Amino acid sequence: MRTVMRLLVSGIVGIQALGAGTAWAQSDIDASRNNAIVRAIELAAPAVVTISVVSYQRETVLEPLFEDFWGLFGPPLARPRVRQRAVEGIGSGFIYDDAGHILTNYHVLQGADAIVSVTLPDRRRLEVEVVGGDERSDIAVLRVKGDTSSLPRVALGDSDGLRLGEWVIAIGNPFGMLMRDSQPSVSVGVVSAVHRKVSRTIGNGERLYQDLIQTDAAINPGNSGGPLVDARGRVVGINTMIFSNSGGYQGLGFALPINRVKRVADELIRYGRRRDPWFGFRGQSVAETDPYTLSQIGVSVDTGVLVTEVVRDTPAAKAGLQPGDVVLAINGEVVEHPLDVDFINWALFVGDTAEFDVARGSKTLRMKLRLEEYRE
Image 1 (spheres, rainbow, N blue to C red):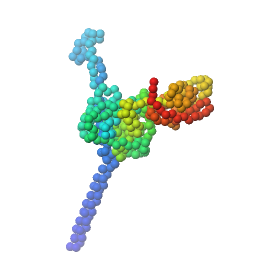
Image 2: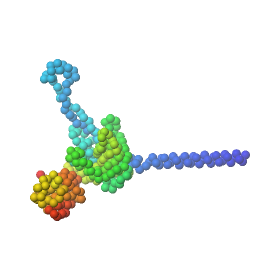
Image 3: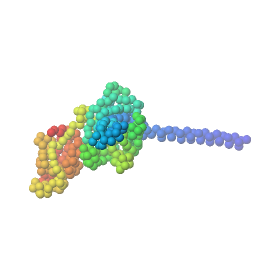
Image 4: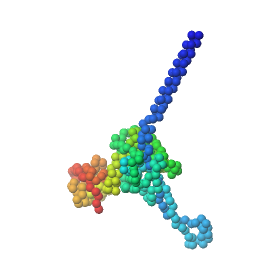
């Protein structure tokens, strides 16, 4: 009898231990589900909007009922009709301040005839106005009309502090026109690289796709303009572009760093435009200049940008730059072509200081320029 009782007691204890172990295991699972990624998404996703736009394209058509009839009389007598075809587009954006300003990519709105809707994940449709946009930076700002006190907002982070390998989350509405759903989707990856430069030919040399954040978080059509968020739920970039041979995601996504985006947005809000800074000189590539000409003006280097004109009363003139000088580097970045100078210039802002390394004859000089707004 005692043996039986001992077995029963040990069995009860074993069942209790098993139950406690199961409870602990369940607790661990619940804790793991509520991880940093989940919390970051819960913080940021409510402020992500879906932006739907439409453009109208003219096309020539024959009415189906009359096409065969007019065809009997040959092409000269055909009576085509011109109509407008609506082409829909979709992108993402996010509300980031108490005034109801929305950040997105310029190319989300570019070419659109109208903004059809701006929708929050809770299905609220927002009435907005365009504050301004900058094609070179690929940044645009919208503003919600009316009372903005109940709107969700994201917190902006520090893109300069990003570390390779840290978790990031891309939030947006890829293929939203197919799903017809305002709920954003998320993809998770890491920071693959920072300060990425894209060839000047991307965007026909008119887009400043420089200093980009590279991530392997999946970015697809419709993600453009949505936030790239760190593990604390703060926006560190705007999802902007991918590199792909097929048109789909291949692990190479790029985002504009939020520190730069914020500076452009501040200018758009304050001035209604992005003020163009400039150095105030024109030049040509030393490598593309006739060697005899170079020898005649005393150029002793074989790379850089040869200064051909300095505009009076500009930052370049005030700093002492002269025709015949060769600009070797700006802010430590080597320049070899005038477009290199343009890209560095576009990345700066009115009031910024730029440091030039210049070859003048056999001497190397260092000059500091304070950028001013471009004037014609």
